[in-house]
Amino acid sequence: MPTQTVLSVVGARPQFIKAFPVSRLLRERCSEVLVHTGQHYDFGMSDVFFDELDIPTPEYNLGVGSASHAEQTAEMMRKLDEVVVAENPDLVLVYGDTNSTLAATLVAVKRTIPIAHVEAGLRSGDWSMPEEVNRVLTDHCSSLLFVPSDLAVKTLANEGITAGVVVTGDVMYDAITLVRDRARDESTILDEAGVEPGEYILATVHRQANTDDPARLERIVRGFVDAPLPVVFTVHPRTEAALKRNGLWELTTRELIVLEPLGYLDFVRLVDDADRVATDSGGVQKEAFYLDTRCVTLREETEWVETIESGWNELVGTDTDAIRTALRRTDELPPKPSLYGDGDAARRIVDAVVNAL
Ligand code: UD1
Ligand code: UDP
Image (cartoon, rainbow, N blue to C red; front, side, top):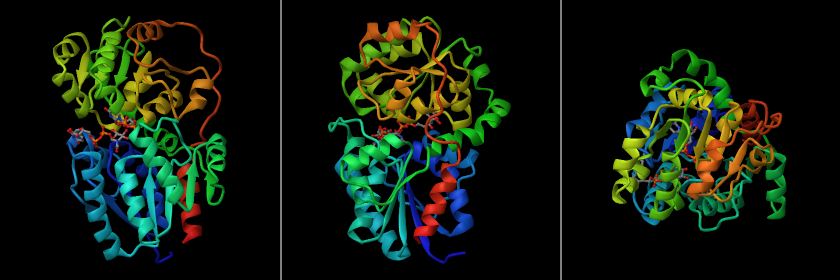
């Protein structure tokens, strides 16, 4: 086994899920130091995933927590730099497009440590979206870029990045494949929510553009209120605060089935059995696709354009009438293509990392 060290950095909910298939394989082949920045810290946003999935306990938790983009990123960088100096890693592995991703990238690139980026090559084209800034900067600093699709290869090539690009497929497909049966066997969330399979809509909302604009948030909630089926709404803490701030919490809890953020098994079970999902999440759009569930995306654009082209995902933005219409659509969906790999992305990522060491 190589004695080289990979420093993997996670911090937000989707990153725990992406690290779950990768870290277990990585530890069989080299030495991994897992760092949790503490960007997400509530039990339901963090510990639940480590408890129910086979994710190693992080060697470091930096406890950074919530703040403005600048403060949060700066604090992460300061603390990550200390870890990098102490551990002297040969490579830094980052996931997705959060502030934790960017902080680790900036620390590593300034210390001239190679960076490997899982979920590279994705673009929304919207530079006002914090994640777009994070992912573009991360890609341009990375020496290994793990992409989910051929389209992402082209996107990177258009920006002049061709070296180190590896088509791996999507690690979230690996994650779903690993837990789908367990979710069916173990989760009792449908009973707890009081819904029947195929007889409810699952909703999530947390994008800055939707939560920080009261008009957009209200239009979304009003679209859900008029849905033809009960809406199970798992509410991100950011969204709960925004709903309360804007006088929408009473309407939301009266008209919708409101749940706290759920663990992965319960959430996957809800996606699997939903009539459709309505979401502005990146990960949930793909999970709906993998689990044969129709998706209504509450944004004007998406990074996962292949799901739109397939007909299984529809971009509706935040117009209340457009949401209502999309939640009622009953047209037959076309046969589902296979997108984003075969559930073996983690192995390809680990192979490439070990080869690079
Ligand atoms: C972050 C990522 C986003 C990702 C999302 C996954 C950035 C810029 N954004 O957004 O790309 O899609 O995570 O969920 O990195 N909060 C809590 N408890 C927690 C975590 C957050 O109460 O455990 C609240 C705090 O009020 C905080 C707010 O949620 O200010 C936003 O959290 P933050 O991590 O800054 O951004 P997210 O919206 O979660
Ligand atoms: N998720 C979860 N519980 C929930 C909502 C989402 O486990 O209550 C999972 C979901 O299965 C997906 C990930 O969290 O794997 C998506 O995270 P989120 O929507 O917060 O972020 P994004 O993917 O938009 O970055």
